[in-house]
Image 1 (tube, rainbow, N blue to C red):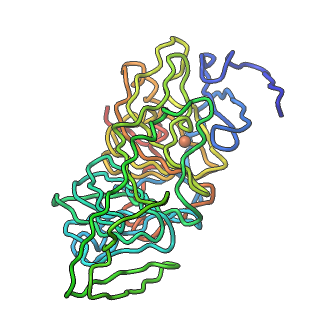
Image 2: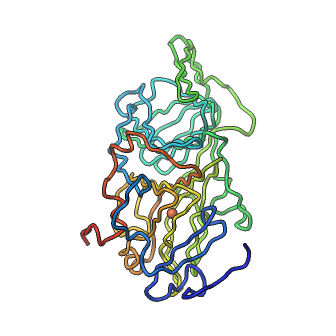
Image 3: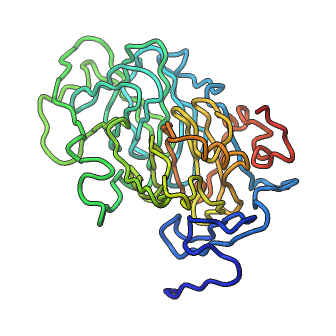
Length: 375
Ligand SMILES: [Fe+2]
């Protein structure tokens, strides 16, 4: 439907000047890109008193997750959330991998929340540091070799197809980052022989080990357009408007079949007096939303949630600002935060590792009427 209607009490434009005493609720399709209406409600739609059923906001402290790779060089990351398009894992490796990994289920996007080191690959080594996205195409042989004692990766596995970039259209070639930033490796073959080298292949989530008496990272050169690469979130340059709150889709970093990866990044708050600084309430019916806090706090929260908090806001049920976030955003000049957001089209399921780390009261933090939170 192209024609836009305005009935009853509304603002003149969405995202600006909510009528006194109302709460703006965006009812939209296709994330923030499709047809949408703004509803001006007398109450925040997150002011629930009870939720019966699985469709509720969830949060975990992912530092409570203990993947086997934390203590065992032969260990693996912990899977937390998954559907047929995307799986999310946490890796906390302290020592170099004792094997070479080949993922035949999908691409891996490693977001480095903490740590420095090297990922050795068929194509050559890529060093990593905090804030890097390292993309390893499906089928790449690799080995993580940390230099720091503590390493924390959020791993996003794309199961239905390759990692790509969102269409930029009118944003042009340099927003939200210049493709010239992408760094890919130079060959650096490891020509060791004589020991036993294991390549562990994952296909349909089952493992097969293949053994060699030479290092499998022995490529002396490569040519083509499929390779590992990295970029760091500090180099991202999201669009900004003084006069309106832009939706997160404008700073999407990767697009894969069935999901998007969006990087929330530091930005000044809107300065136009009638521009809303916090997101509208929304029920986002076409995506389950996962947000991993790398640093800082999202503008819709009243308190810091802590680094490495991971939230799941399922499609269909509302989320949006804590009531006190409105006041907080009025007093602040900027949002100084980096957060990794994965929006998945199909419903995400959670694992036992996720359930074990869950905060049972997160759903209630949206309503200060239920849970008093210290000022
Ligand atoms: Fe959202």
